Amino acid sequence: MNNFYMSKGASKVINTCIKLQEGEQFLIVTELSRLSIAEALATEAARIGAEPTICIMKGRTRDGEEPPKNIAAAMKASDAFVSVVGRSITHTHAVKEAIAAGSRGLVLTHFTEEMMIHGGIEGNFEELKPICIRMAQAMAGSEKIVLTSPSGTHLEYSAKGRRGNHLYCMVEKGEFSTLPTVEANVSPLEGTANGVIVADGSIPYIGIGVLEEPVTLKVENGRIVEITGGRQAQMLADDLKAKNDPNVYNIAEHGVGLNPKCSFCGFMLEDEGVFGSCHIGIGTSITLGGTVKAACHYDVIMKNGTIVADGKTLMENGVVKI
Image (cartoon, rainbow, N blue to C red; front, side):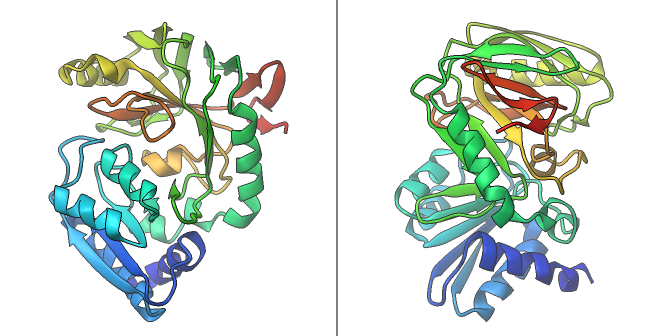
């Protein structure tokens, strides 16, 4: 029955987010567990006269793992692609190269049938677009950005020379975005981040989800050096240690959630979009403007962020000021 109700969300993805056109080659990368969502998207794509192809791959063993080479090649050859997967392939060379080749990409990581019907997908992306762009532009290239939150976050870093990324769920040629999170982000200059991150919203990876209690990460010279808290903090610490890759501790991203229709539910692309939240991405940064490729990319999310960039307040306690 949900297939019927997903038609409205599928239409929004195809016609508003990707703006798929008649005759275009449209690739849907998915897994068996998300096949119903992929089929809903393919049905709408075929209805408007595009040519959809569904590629089913084995679920990745970790977030950030590359898709099979043949799928990566198909992504690069497509006019537009959507990734509907459990483990994220967003921060991969496959996505980066497909976008560089001119494809339009949209990633629906951890997506459920319910997320195709309710929640962040109901956001007005056209209205949110200018807010998202302004925030990204304000963060881009800043000499000094200070992020604080009521829970105790105080992180300082430089984004000198770094681009701002605006992801508002709509893409043009050579762009990718996430859905349904609307976010602006920047990749801190490697080695410049110092301070403390206190996540009190969510860590929507490896079964952690919405946080029971704060998770504190101490940062020195661009890397996490200590993780403290309760059960969920230990889950994160153990997982990162097991990766046996020092780059997983890299401070890769500072993102700002800007979708008022999103709420904390334990799913990555809903949680990251919560309006007024901030997230710090750790690990891979190559798709965001950084230089680090790691064994994973995780985000830790805090509520009601305050952002000051080169002395100008961009957000205060979760309220946009620009």
